[in-house]
Length: 166
Image (cartoon, rainbow, N blue to C red; front, side, top):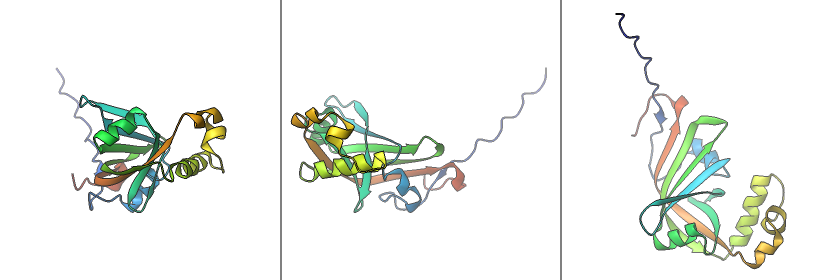
């Protein structure tokens, strides 16, 4: 009977050190209109609810947009604790997890923010209602701008070297 082949060492994933309430500069690209972002909110029964979202980052806050009455909007009003996971599918060695608390939900400025996000993600000036989704939806959907303050940030980078700050 031959001896088992030794397993290759498990690569150490670099969890970047630093203040766990701030997004490191090396990962700001992952919160400023990332290719993939998923927001998890808490349902009334305590179970998680996750939605793909567009987001950006300004003044130390993550900003997402939703519509009045959507499940995630109702969840955030009831329980402001959320988690945002952002990554680039072209480089799965880096990701950013932002746990936080919704500080504000407002309809003021929400449409302008949604149009800004639409333009950023489209790569050209573009309006959300009429160019991204049918214009008729503007009659029934009301955008809500949500500002999230990070309370715990995990910035992962396989290429960062030895893991720290776990």
